[in-house]
Structure formats: C-alpha cells, structure tokens
Length: 149
Image (cartoon, rainbow, N blue to C red; front, side, top):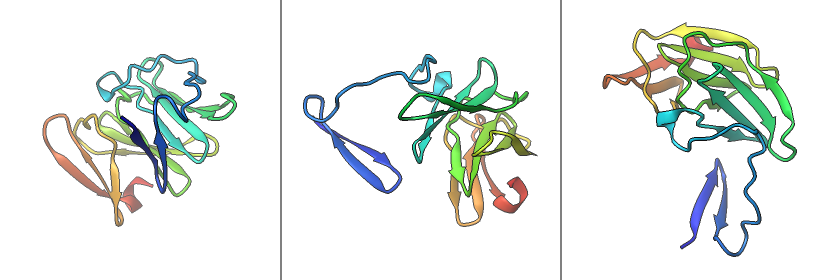
C-alpha cells in the first residue's frame, strides 16, 4: 500500500516498488526511528537537522550530498528527544525545560528561553505568534514567539 510523504507544501506518493530507489543514512548517525529515543530529524529546504541526545548538539547536513554543514554548540539542558521546528531562519529546539533557538545558517545559539516545565516528546507547533508544546507531565505551554526569538 502506498503512503504519502509530506514535506510542508510538497506531497510525494511513495510506493515500495515504483519510485523509492534507495534509502541511505547520509548522516552516519543511528536513527532509532521515534521520539522516545531522540534523533527526530527535521528536513527543510534540502537540509536535514539532526538533534542528538548523546552529544547534546544539533547537526545540519546537506540532504543531497550528506555533507556536514554545521554542528551547534552543546545544549546543556538537552534531552533533544523532540523534533525541532523551522521558523524564519531559525531552528527552534525543545531543550528539556528550555527552548533553544539556533541560527539555521550557522547553527549558533541565538537564544535560550526557560519555560519551567520539562517539555514533552512532540514537535512544537507555531500558531499565529505563539509556539505551542507539551510537557512530559501533561502541561500544554504557549509562549509568544517574541519572547523565544
């Protein structure tokens, strides 16, 4: 049975036998495959952003070539089990009880915002001017983007 692979506004129909040529781990990281183990990647505009709860960084790779573009500084509060989100040239990374904001071009830390609760294992969403995420203790947080960025 085919399944849909959505990438923002692009939709591609993938079937096991027809148009999926190869699957290749270009990052050379092990990817457990769900957020309970971390490494939930974000793919945006030809770049794959890979958080690592092992070394507490985010790495950006060119999706076509596998070439490393940058590695962020260590995010010391990081469990990095959540998938980052791209917004306005920033990579927003749930970082345990903080939200880390990385420059999408350089990987440098642009801001770190303390939220006061341990964030859950979900990708945050941006609705209007707010960043919304959940905590592992059942809280939902909504933070104005102007405070995060």
